[in-house]
Image 1: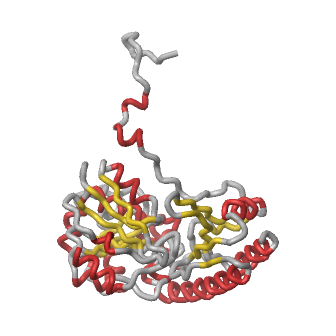
Image 2: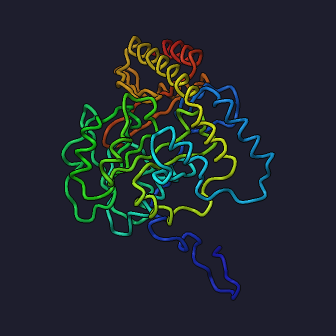
Image 3: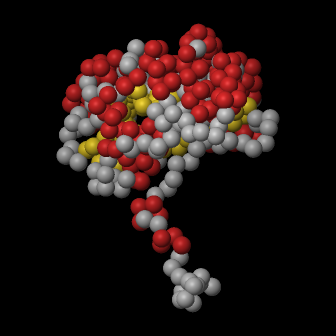
Length: 362
């Protein structure tokens, strides 16, 4: 039965009220968040350890001060603290509601209908979703078998307005050297957003390149190396001329008072971050070595996860069998690339259980 409007006439299907590009696109699907307890959760690259105790204290303090007023729209306290840690003036930093918010702001600011965005494939699926929201053309440049990028990534294109480069990349955990990234940026006519969600687990980063090239922008998050995925806080480091324009695009109060307080405390506690990093890197080595002993092909990772495949057991089957055992990893399939398992670095006890159960399956 067709719905009717208030005048008794047949009303169109509700989906026709949406823009055509919204109806046609598929939305981003986050990793599974099980609602029941008891899972060893190694599927969404969360940090397995609690955040710095200072984070909890700062959030409790913000609650005691009251939540009846709007937060600082520029998250000044965080930008000042981050600037001290990173060696940048606060005007070089833009805060966001997670790095996804930063990516959204950049896409909205630089990309319009009919423009093109470019990013590697396979990589973060959200890039394509953000481009489609802007009615942009999507150009995915396939990684080469060794997870490097060909000259195609810097090929001139008149309508190209934005390039994303996740570094380290997900799902592979691989990283492109700084010198290569700077060379790419010199040859591109558009901004290059280097998505450094996992950079604290890598051997190097691109922060200093931001000073040398205005078109290089570095996006970061507190979700991974600061164990604050539930806080939803990220930031961008870019030339102040870029930051000034991006402020026009962000939501008025895109970071709440609790997240600003928690994020400021988190980035100030660098001793906690360094200790946490060393624990995760040590466990990452154990995970990679253990999987290798079980016959997996494991890509050398610079992130807090590993990407692996097994020559004899399909990744989909392993995923399903591990889930039955209440171990959740991420099964990912890329139509033009293949499939595999992305496994987050958990605690030593969690990784011991994963390896023990996987040994029964291969």
